[in-house]
Image (cartoon, helix red, strand yellow):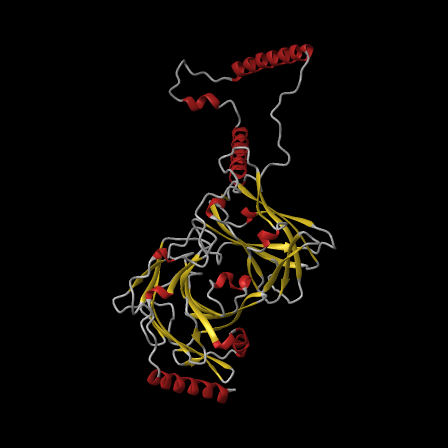
Length: 491
């Protein structure tokens, strides 16, 4: 295997060098590039501009939860000729959990996150904080992570100022993927070659917009040439493969309605809704017999993203009870992931859930999301991982995910008991007699004060100290109980 690795790397480097000497690359005009956006969440306002050296800078300002965006080169490139890419990272992701930059090679000019729904297949790279290169394959069943490769051991690939060279080529049926001269040893990468007819591939570039307030990286060259070497600056009006929706959503709940007690976040009984979903390590389909979403697990990390546009952002403090109708033979643990306005990271915001086998019938799962301490403020993203340890062959059916306002199941009515006239008179007589006795007793036991109140504490000397201690303890316990009830409110 080591000999094969060395041979592939040597052959690729030599062939790319020869190609550079013999073939002059065609000019990469600015008009051949297209802005691409994720269609869910806040519109991804990625900024595209030419650098002084005619490279292309991708950047954004501000958080855009559930969004990412990028740039697509609309003309096909040839894997037999080889594809070289040089990029510079301009933003450090230190302290971030889910920021990334990356590129993809697909068999069609599509945005990668929706590729497999439109016949798109290929290879995707996401480089995350810490320098991890996560390689994925998109096929008919979805989006699958193959491996994590760090390239050079002493290089942080998400450090500001770092420049990276990527090389990809089909060499005699083996796909050689090289990062800074180091071959990525992943045999499954060869499986994607069958997706590219005539070895033609489309390349695109993306970055996350979920965590960093500002993020940027520069595409310095593509196949040895500045990517925007000719033409004007790339206009934002050039269109996009997936145009973000900016109009008001008429289906969104009226959050200003004081009587709104519940809403359906997503209705899986609608085929068009199922068709809009994205996932990882699972195949999604609409089951007509069940009238529900069918999730067939294909890998170890299955999850289903729940699209949330801006009009659907909701108050987690108000709507914290989640209900989900599902059916499965699986027995084990799953996870809900989410993001909030204050904490836009799914790496942090999650809640483990217990999935029970439903024995052929549908079961309603119910849980208070505030068991997760980060569930507060504006909720902006949601995801379900049906199995923490996914195994091929696991099947789940889902009909909906609903959220409700928490309400006390046993409220105590503040009503006074009915009394008869006789009872009222008897009670009044008893109170009068008790008050008279108390005054007489107090007058008998009261100490002399000589008409002075210079020492008011002496007024209570007739009451034993232990009585006041007991009263103080009871009062403190009552106050503590009230505080617990107010802060806990529904536990």
